[in-house]
Amino acid sequence: MEKGNSDSEWWGPALVPFGQCGRWQVGPLHLCIRRLDGEWRLSKRSTGELHSTAVHREVPSVYEPDQAEGAVSRFGVSGASERIELVPALADRHVVSTPKLPFYIPANESVTIFVGHPLWLQLLAGDDRLLLSDFAIQQPHDTWFGPDTQTGKLCYASRSFCQLSLGEVDDRPLRATTAVLIKNRASSELYLERIKLPVPYLSLFADPASGGLWTEDVVLERLDDEDLAPLQVRSGPPALLPRARKTAEPRNASQANVMVRAFGSLFSSRAQFE
Image 1 (cartoon, rainbow, N blue to C red):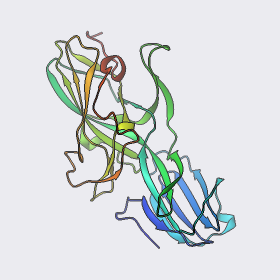
Image 2: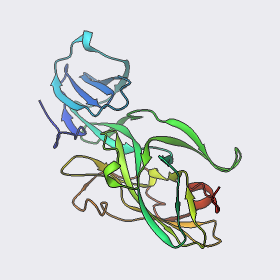
Image 3: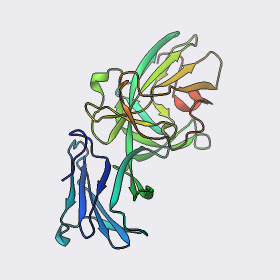
Image 4: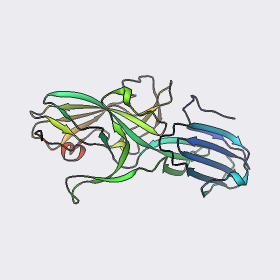
């Protein structure tokens, strides 16, 4: 039976012999992946236990029909490789997070917040890592982010709060964390109700000690009288985890450092106390 590199590390390659299967649990998600002649079969189900932190894998596992769970997806393949790889990935849309309570960032002040993101799972087959499937571990809700229904972007709503304290960060195995440095260089305070991050431009890194997943650090800077603001994605692992190893590349690598419509899109803001 194969195991991950840490107690919470559920991803990585595995060998599933013909006629047998591998079983994985990642929080509420249960997977059974079976290797047959000319195909892979995937069944998955969710227990609905949103706060589950359980992770487990059993590879190989003898396939028993009465243990098959959930809807079955079939993938026809050539070749005889028994290699399957589970790879964590970030969402394919921008993700909106909220603090437990909105707060102000005073003029000329900087603050770091920790933002949680939902995870996707990619299944790669064979030595050439053929992509079979790409799906959310736990499907997030859709949300619209923008000043009106005509201007804005369809995003995902994170189930995790963004936090000012690292000690309050959600460390469930189906979440990734980004440290976001916000620099308010404007002459007025910034009221932070929600934050939207372009997670398809971020990579994933794994903490070698805990197996927790993080992205690169992100810097957002608010300037006076500017609708566009620089979004800086710092290269390499997060500063808090300099030994973290990269586990996944960005979905979109070409625009990691861009000018964004930060305070009309990334933030909901107001200049005065109510």
